[in-house]
Image (tube, rainbow over all chains, first blue to last red; front, side, top):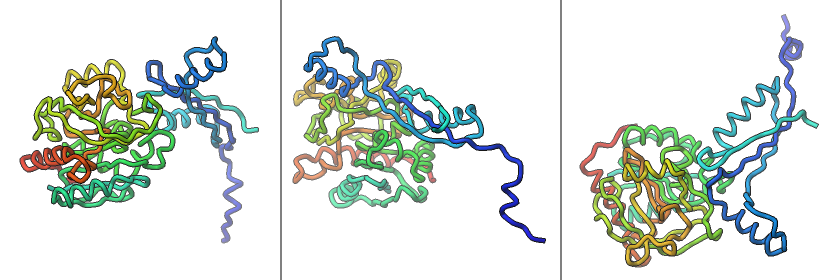
Length: 100
Length: 236
C-alpha cells in the first residue's frame, strides 16, 4: 500500500491564519526615563513649550500564525510576560489585526 | 574553592574575572559556556560583565534563557553562591534571582570611572571579611547601571538588609554627586533574601592588582573564598 505525504494535507484540520501584532512596551509610572527627559528638553528648546511628561517606549511589530484571534492573544500575552516586557519596570499592550 | 565563570555570547569581562581569580588570587577556576548544562562541583558561580546578546531588547533579558541558567537557578535555589557583576547583575535581576531592575544611567552617558563604595552589611558571604562602613574603590563601566526598585521592594530590601554596597564620596557619604548613574538610594550592590546571590555594578575583577590602581576587589573575592571554606556548597 502506498502512502503519500499529500494525503495528510487533505485531513480536516483547523486552519491557521496569519495575524499582524503590534506591541507597545512603555516604562511604568515612577520609573525614571532620562531619554524622555532629554527629548522633552530638546522640544522645549525648539519652542514647543506645551510639551510635558515625554516617555520613550518600545514598539514591536510581528506576525503570528494562529487558529483564532483568542489563541493569538494568549500566545502574545505569554511572549510579553516571558520576554518582551520586564514587569518590574514596564507595562505593555498590543493590537492584533488580520495580515494585510 | 571552586569557581565557575560563565561566558555568554557578548560577555567581555569573563577573562578579567578568570585572570584575576587565577593570577592574582591563585584560585581554581572552571570556564563555563552558556550553552552547556551546569555540571560539576562549584562553590561560586560568576556571571561576568559585558554585553550578552548585544544588550538587545533589555540588558540581560536573553541571557537569562541560556541553557546554563537552568542549572544556575537550581544552584542558587539550593543555596549555592552566585555573583553577578555588571551585565551579570542585570541577568540576575532579569531572571528574578534578585529584585528590581537596572535601567539607563540618568546622565544618559556610558560611564567608565573609579567609584567609592561603602560596605553596608557584612553578614553575607560576599562581604564577610569586610567591616561595616569600610570604603572600597573600584571602577564602574556601564550605560545601564541605574538600579531601580519600587517603594515596596526598597522597603523590603532595607528591612532584610539586602543592600550590601552603596556609592559614596571619598568621605563615605552617599551624596547625589557620588552616585554615578542615578541608582535609587545610591545602591551599588544587593543580595537576595537568602543572602547567597549577589549582584553589583562595579567591577571587583578590575581592582585586584596594584597595577590597576586598586586591590579592593580582591577583598570581595577573598570574602567569598573565606566564606566557602566554612560552608557546604550544593551539588548540581
